[in-house]
Structures are given as C-alpha cells and as structure tokens.
Image (cartoon, rainbow, N blue to C red; front, side, top):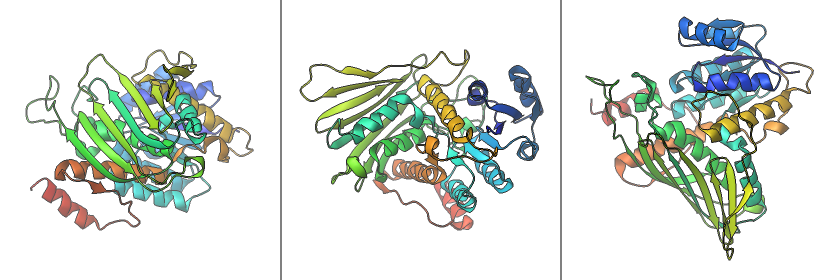
Length: 388
C-alpha cells in the first residue's frame, strides 16, 4: 500500500517531485511552504488538497505517512528529526552542517523501522547504476582516477537568501559538490580519507544583491579526494583512488555534467544522462547507455541528470512500499542504493574538510564524528574564523 505524502518546499525540486510521485501512484496529501502565500499558490497550481506554512500541520496530518523534505539546509534537520519522532518515513535533502547531520543519524538509529534516506537522485540515474555495475564487473580493471566536472549558470536566487550564505549551506560545494562526493564514494565503494580544496566567490554582488549585502557562498570550487583503504567485492583494491571535482557556476546558458572513471584496462564516462565506455586499445568510445527517460515535467529548474535520477528514485520508492499491507511499512531491497543518513553525515564531513583545506592550503583528514561536539567549542571556532 502506497503511503500518503507530505511535501516540504515550494522550489523547483518540489514542483517536479509532485507530478513524479503522482505518476507512480502516490497521493500527495499536503504541502508546506515558507509562507502561506507560497504554499497556497503552489498547492492550487498542482492540485494539492491541503497547504500550510506550519510544519507541524503536515507532520501531524493523519493521511501523511511519508514526508519529502526539500527546503533550505538550515531547516532540514529540525523537520527530519521531528518527523521520525512522530513516526513518519523521511526522504530529505542534505543538512547544513555535520552537527545537524549527526543529530539526524541519531534519530534514524533510534527509529530503525522507519525509512530515512537522503535524496541524492544521482545514485538512481540509470547511467550511474550501469557504471557501478560495470565497475564491479571489472570493465576498467583496477580503478585509478575519478574526475567529475559540473559547469553551469549561477546558483543564486533572485533575491538575497540562504543560497548567498556559505554558513547556511549555499554555494556550489554544498549544493552540487556534496552530491558528487556521495556519488563518487558510492561508485568507488570506499570513502575519502584526505581532501584538498580551493573555493572562490567571484560574484559577490549583482543587480539584485547589492548595498551592504555580500555573497559569501562559493561559485567556483576545485577539490581532490584520496579514497583510501580497500573496496569490497569485485571492486577491492590495494592502492588509493584519486578523485578530482571541478565546479564552476559562472557560465550562463551552459550546462556540463560529466563523471569519468579511469582504470588499468579502460574508462567509463557519464555525460549528462548517457554512459560511454572505451577499453584500452579501442579506437573510439562506444555508447553503452543512452537517455531512455521520458520528457518529464515541462517546466523545471533541475538539470536533466537530477531530473532523470529523481524519477528513478520515486519509482524505487513505489516498489519499496506498494506490496506492504500497512502504509508505513516498506522493504529495503528496491532502495538499497539510496544514501542513508550515515552517508549524509560522511558527505557533510567531507564538505567541511574541503572548506578547512581552502582556508589552510593543506590536505585535511576526513574524520566522521562519533559524538556530538560541545556547542560552545563550535561557537568559538566560528568567531575565530570570522575574526570577531
């Protein structure tokens, strides 16, 4: 039995998610927006029967058993943790900080019977599903290097908001880079041990953001990850894999999304939603998987890889719930590839290590927290960093 869904957010992801959910048979019962006006406008546009600006109204809605949280990062932890405590299954975006992510992990561990996943849709994109399978089968041999590039227009909103603030989770590293950190770790089968990065903010003001306002979030980012240790199964290896990621959001009208993995016997390249491969000795690349997705929603601010991946993730959610007699019951098999809250904590730890590296100019270790730190220590570090 498919659960009723409550959606948090009125941005581009929510606009795309609602028709995707309905297309798979889910009933979207409620919508929560930042303001009553935003919630009412989108609810009327999409035909959602209940709307509100109060999160508890959705969390306590009797017909909502699954909540999808796509809101600014600083608000994610509070709603996700509360939803699990009330007994709702949760699909959400990344948290704003590692501390927030740790609190989400703690809640998920306390309610293991409930679904709690981070909605990184790239894991579900067919091109990356096929890439991971081919890596496991040894298509490229011993994996050596991964390289990811995303170029596109500015990520800033039309008015000053969280996307402009580095401390609120804005910027290319947190918004896009975090998804690539998760994806590369998923493909390689192991996690980053050390990172080195460089972040820059080239556009600090524009026509809509001026005066005393300044953008602090990055619009250019380059970082390296040494994926240490040994993978599992057929991807086991003795040496470290070097991953490089380049993000540039100063290119209006352009969009490039490419992930390449290189090994001792060949390479695999995902360009957009298509997968290409070439073995050593071959004279050209071959198309291994084309874009087989449908047209999708007509209006979307989402890049095509994320849109296609989101559609595949919603399909997987349907398969996880539909055979169950209870609306809140699910089986893990169809969504086994999804990122867990533990994965979210690791990714946020990498993001914060890259930020430290950009300030220090040195390689930084990735050490996932095992207990919540003293909040006073975090305050002192923030004050020191901002030289207050």
